[in-house]
Length: 402
Image 1 (cartoon, helix red, strand yellow):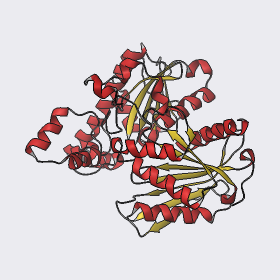
Image 2: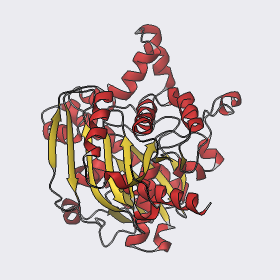
Image 3: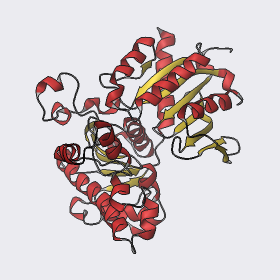
Image 4: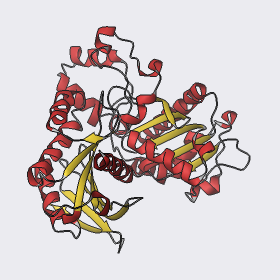
C-alpha cells in the first residue's frame, strides 16, 4: 500500500461498541471532511446489518450479513473497506477506546499500549476486548498504517479530586478504582460545536451536556472543562439506560449473588443487558417502542418515567455543582430525536430558568428554549467520529514535526 504525507491523505475512524462498529473515512485537511461512513449493527444479537453512505450521494445502502459473530463482522468490514475508493490513501486509523484509566491524551498505538489495554480489559468487558481485537486485525492486515487510540475517558481527566473519588478503602483507589466518566469524545465535540455555533464566552459558561442514547450520561462543564459526570468506574453507572441499570445499591449485588445464586458473570450480564428500560418494562429497550405502548402498558410508562426522572434529578444536582446553568444541550439518539422525552425532562425545571418552547421542541429546532427562559436549551447532534478524526490529525501533526 502506498503511503504518502499524512497531510494529503485520509484518516479511517473506527468506533467499536459491544454490538456495533461505526466507521468513517475522512480526508485529512485543515478540518477533516467525511468521504464515506457507515455502521454494522446487531452484531451477536441477530443477523448483522451494514449501512453506509458516501459524501457524494448521501444515499444509504444496506446489506444483511448472515453472521452473529463479531470476528466475522470485523473481517467483513476490512474486506469491504479495501474495495472502497480512497482506501489505499489512508495514513492512519483512529480508534475510540472506551476505558483509558491513566491514559489522558490520544496516542499512537504500540505493542506496549495494547498489552496495557489487555490488562485493564476486565474493567470494561463490554467494549475493550472488541476494540483490542479490531486494532490487532488492522495491524495484522495493514502493518504499515499508523493507528491512534482516542480515549473516551480523557475529557473527564479535568474533574476535581472530589468528583473522582469513590468512598472505598484508599488501597483500592491507589490501584486505579475511581470515577472516570465516559462519552468524553461526544462531550468534547459538543463543546467544540457550541463554541462554533455561539462564541467562546458561551462555551466557557455553565453547561450541562446530556448524551442520551442506548448508553446515557450527563456532564457538568465549566470553562470548557468537565467538573462532574454521571458515569463512574464503568459505563454501567449513572442514569438509567436502555439495558444498563445505571447507579445501583451495592447491596443488590450481594442479595442476588447470595440468594439468587448469580455468578459475577451473570450479574455483569444482568446490569448491562437485562436491566434499565428493558428490565423495568419487560418489553423493550427502545424508547420509541415504549412511548408507543405506554398508555396501555403501565410497565412501559414506568420505564419512561424513571428515565426522565433520573435525568431531571441529575440536571438539578449538576446545577448545584455549577452554581447555576447557562446552557443545556441534548444529544445522542434519544436526546436528538425524541421531543416528548426532552419535554418531560424539562418540565418543572423552570425554577432553574429551564423553560422549553413546545413548538421549537416539536420541530427539533437547534434552540428549543422559550424566549422567557434564562437557560438556552439546544439540540446538537453529536459526532464522535469527526472528533476522533480531529484528534488523530493532531497526533499525526505532532509526530511529523518530531
